[in-house]
Image 1 (tube, rainbow, N blue to C red):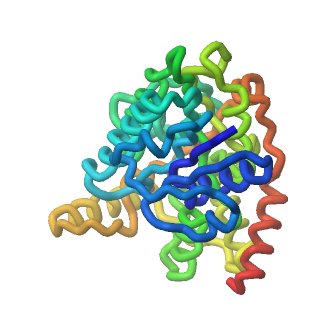
Image 2 (cartoon, rainbow, N blue to C red):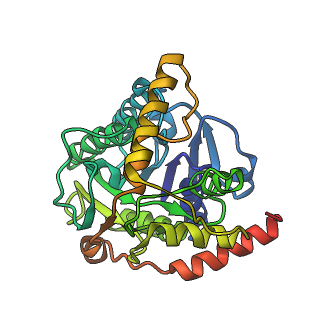
Length: 329
């Protein structure tokens, strides 16, 4: 098949691209910048913004993996909306104009996070009336549009991988390590909050499985699916094991949840008053994520997609440690 991956140079997008290439598929990658390593893989690269007319880039494609997004926990809502909502609508429109039959969208479990614990929840969980940050709010709106776009000419599906990590991660793992090295990493609260996470290869696997099974008449069309390693783990256990893989000591200092939330509120206020666009050291959404449990029932993905995580957390940590050693981290 001919597959196009938006954000194909990113962490998840790159993993999807590599798996497609390994399968012998014809692959295109759409990114705002030029990435020669993609061409070295034999990938056709397209430089464009999600809000450009993408019709020509999509022509001849059998499936589009829409992975590109603006992630983060801080910044103007309009910036997130332009990329995550408007950009997604442009992807849908281009698929319809170019005759693309399948559209696989990378969503996030945060689209249904209302601020409290999410324990063994499944896809019946509703969207909340309020989100704690622009990212989950705009991803929820984009997911709604993706699912609503499902029709005989365009089959759509949304995947919600949670906390993707592994070698090559340019977001979660580097943030943890940077905060630990600066001495600013603290446990929040006294409870053992349990979370799901997703090793990068498993997240990519899920996307290819969805693409292979997607058709308007298939059970997965027009639906969303949680994706994770199916190994719920205490959040600070996972953080400390990532730090150990990098040769760093575990986090021992603890901040009460109420103190962390008050500090985050003050930081957000100060940054807003100063008009700063860089991310504060702590935000209320970050406190919510670190002081609640969020793990998911994967029965639907395992049944409908045939999804089975093939890389365990244990194996993933070994691979992560090996990557740190090879990089001299």
